[in-house]
Image (cartoon, rainbow, N blue to C red):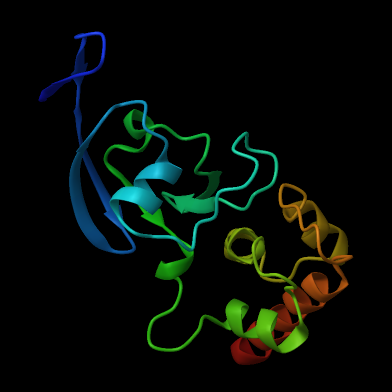
Length: 170
């Protein structure tokens, strides 16, 4: 651990943060209380993860941590040390992920600001339930807010990707 000085000449101890980000090992030195959201956007240039409410209510900053959906605005560096993080940038290989394609084809976005968090929530749902009902879809998206649409295009997008995946598995 290193130290820096702030304006009051109090030492700031830095955490050696080790994580796997989108399947790539990363090591940085940050304050233990730096939010994962800020680490992703400012230190690692993963700007697909959006800043919105900053209190865990809107889901725009949602990412997967060890395959579980979390709001990155609520996670501190010391909580994510030695974990695996997947952001919206980590979903696609060469082509868009099927969820991303479905959102584009079915109009599951308006301004697009909430879309990364919505897509990460849908991925978490599909990873645990390959054939959710409309009610289960709505429940899975209940932590994500969209201020532009009535959610019809979003629900339609999720249903499309579920249909595509179920056809693929038949």
